[in-house]
Length: 258
Image 1 (cartoon, rainbow, N blue to C red):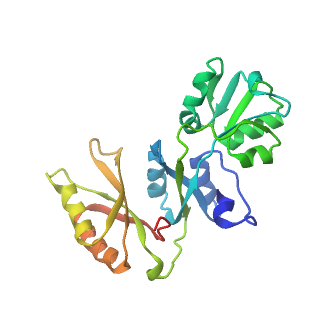
Image 2 (tube, helix red, strand yellow):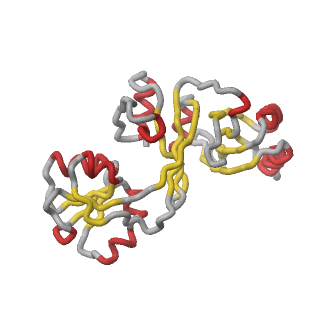
């Protein structure tokens, strides 16, 4: 996905977890990170919202990737040889229906799709399959024995591009923003905030609540909004900073789903 967004000449730093990705940004091993944030089937990856906020990262862009899951094995193996399939839990979930016809195949959660494919090749693991993108099969010289096995074919994942430094782009190019705020427990507090967004001509595309660990039963809201003019968002920012607690802009960037 990183090469699709940045180009083939991009130097990649492999990250086996989102926490590791953030660490590589903070220690300056990497300049920017590509972080999955939601899937059209499985929903939001909630902990990643907290990672962005607590590590003071800036969202500088977004990218949508159509997801195609492929079943791959060592060359010479067939689908009849498979005893176990390993992949990221999200990939296993999205391909669950396919394996109803293969009840003998054990499904095992692993850390990553491509990493599983890599391990099969490096360790020459027979009778083990990976669910991964086609590029992983090409990269690690594996055979795809069943292509596009995801249950729902129209499946996409949204990624955010994050950095420790904010990327300043011309205001006329900014058409989307991600914000975080907290409301009090008074009746209608959240509704009042959402009404302000509507009055300021902001289109709410995502709202996600997350518990504030240090304050039981209190929640932070992470919201994505789109707009046709940056002046609308400027007006909303001024009002929301007054109406809510701990209001923070996590990123202002270009809406790619126009």
